[in-house]
Amino acid sequence: MSVDTATVDAVERAAARIAGHGLAGVEAGMPVYAGDASSSEWAALVAVVASRRLAGLAVQAADDGALVAAPDARQQLVGLHEQQLAVDLELERHLRACARVLDSCGVEYRVLKGPALARYAYARPELRSFADVDVLVRGHQFDDAVDALVDARGLVRRYTEPRPGFDRRFGKGVCLTASDGLELDLHRTLSAGPYGALLDVDALFDSAPTVVVIGGRAVPALAVELAFVHACMHAVLGGSATPLVPLRDVATLAELMTAGELDSAARFSRASRVEAIVRLAVARAAETFAWTPPATVAARFERASLRGFDRWALAAYRPDAPSYPAQAAATFWVLPTLRDRVAYARALVWPDRSYLTPRDGSHARRLSRSATLGLRWRPR
Amino acid sequence: MTGDGSAVRGPDTVLAPARDVLTRRSDRAVLVCTDRRAEPLVLRDTALAVWDSFASGARVSEVVDELRVRFDGDPGQIAPAVESLVAELTEAGALEPAP
Image (cartoon, rainbow over all chains, first blue to last red; front, side, top):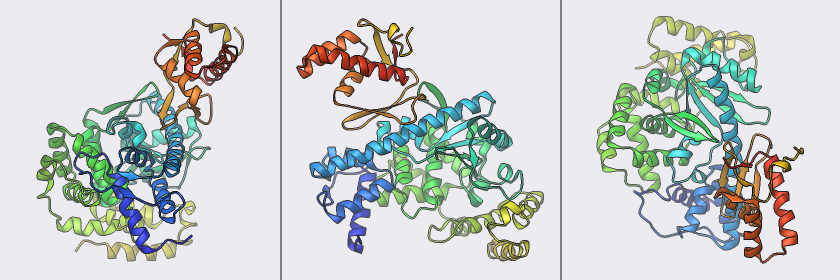
């Protein structure tokens, strides 16, 4: 079934209204009406709600009268919500098991995004579904964490690294997949590309964690203010053209932070050179949801303008263009030492065969491509 | 003790959700996830009523009585049905004797 452009636009607006539902800074407007359960508009909206994992907020919006849904349409949403909740639970179980492994081998970690935010930032966990589990570890414990999870849980690396030790030293992280298809993204930093490379990851562990209890187990998550900065980074740098859930996280956390936490968020974002990213994220959330951010949050970041570095670096994160090669090339230019740059370039320009073969096929082709990319992304 | 743990349960046993159980509530059900079952259990209608009763701390006999009153049911049918559900939930690791 094809859907016309006008319907697509209407559905996107409806999805944004749903994603922003319940925020204190959003005024109740006209209810969203997307047709009855047999209409193409409703089918298109359900498809978007499903793909963006918004069923919890959609059901809440319907209950609150913000989304007009006939009884059969509402039941469809409830059924979709139950499917998402089942996945959420299986992922929480997966996270808890991985947390046991990391605790048992002394790896310090922080849970990121959905599984943590669902438990402490949203009114109830049912409002925030997620697709996978994200855990951050320190670089010097990265390989230990990977080995422990592979050995104890039978997880498999989804992608090989260019050379042994690359992910631990330079990568954003690694995706580990369980036999049942559940994924755990083990992070070394919060973002790919130059912003992730510049981040002081150790500082993320300096703040006391927010502790969430998952199935009787206390699990450490990022402190609230750091989760806010991460949400902003994910919303702007994560590669999605319309990141409704990350933007909702930005707004939710902005409304949750205390004055002290806001101060910490500002200090961390300034030290990590992501102030402009935070301002962009807050502005995009405001535009997407017709949301008024807390005055203190707006005031703190409104003067963070884009510098030349930001204009250059952000070009590597465009959602409409293949971004990994660009981010990899841009990262080269922000690495702090010559030694880092040599090691980084050597791994990417002349990787192991297992990495090279499915990508460029030959060292010569890769060498040529790498040189072109590196020069194109040289800062001006 | 029998394989299904029934020797540790009687009508006066107070049961509660297991301390390590993971749950979510939808509009019409509670989903219950444990380490012993691959997929979450989905409890609706009377099963949901049973779960909610145990979640607030109830004896098995009290749950049977509550259901009999709420659903105007035949005690001869309700008690075995509750016992069967309790056995399933206990076997799945979702319910355990209250501390």
